[in-house]
Image 1 (cartoon, rainbow, N blue to C red):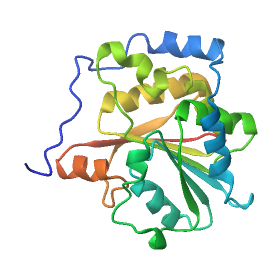
Image 2: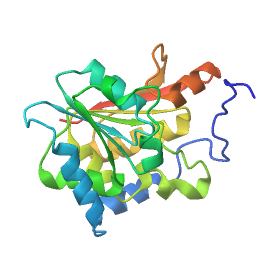
Image 3: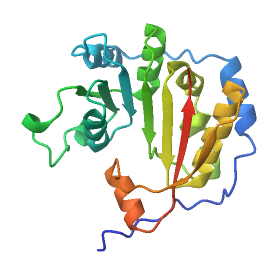
Image 4: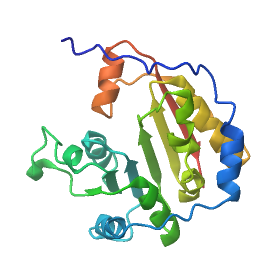
Length: 222
């Protein structure tokens, strides 16, 4: 099987979902109050245990196997970088990096982002940088509410501050994320295609090497 054979998400939806605005409005007006699981509280505290309370914070949300977290920690050595993923199996597969060669300014934690984002917000902490790299696109038309910008937790994301960056190989996802963010912020959010000479994630490398166009949204949230 060829390595560079990745496909763009297939969907009958070819543009921003017609229900997106109404869905975001509902989530903004009806705060998300789902109880937070105790294991996520423990994970949140663990993610800050090695932090000196002075270094700026970077969150790699949905970090998968953690390659992006490692690269971010190397690129920003004066920051504390937190890689969060809900799968312990993915977090344990951070090959080819042995423990001794990992940057010391980072940590991996297993947690559900729905709770983790809310815990960061409730703590009053603010991020310097926030990465959401190649999230599950949930491409079916009926899956809008499963995408992060259609989820009840979305209004918490802009509250975390810093520079937010979201990347995807599906332009509809980024277009929707931008529109939802614009709705919450009340201002324009830029996005577009970009080159990835040094891919941050294995997915990004595979998508690039498959000849796909990659899309990126960047927004200052301070």
